[in-house]
Length: 151
Image (cartoon, rainbow, N blue to C red; front, top):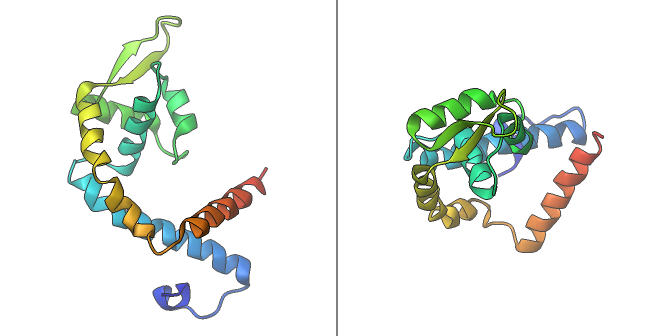
């Protein structure tokens, strides 16, 4: 389907407006495709993102370091981490080098939930299976180029 059909809008100010609307619409569509996978585990996409960041880090991370690596830079990282702690998926400890800071690590329960979600990766990949690998690479390059134009 085309963006025109999906949002029932046939006129755009120009192709630049159309591409921005298409990206925003597609982001929301992708989020909705993944939502049931995360809801089944009582996780949000942001919580999932933080758990993957923690799992990939050899060392404990501060909430500032986590925020720098997150996909959603506008999120309240501290609040999301606190919810992960309450669920038993992450833990916070006082930083060894600076007692004013808190380090965050993933717990064994956090690793287990990610292991279950890892089994869903193929299902997540199926969402974009209409693209060839070459098209996927090209799309990634174009999106990277667009973000670099902001610098």
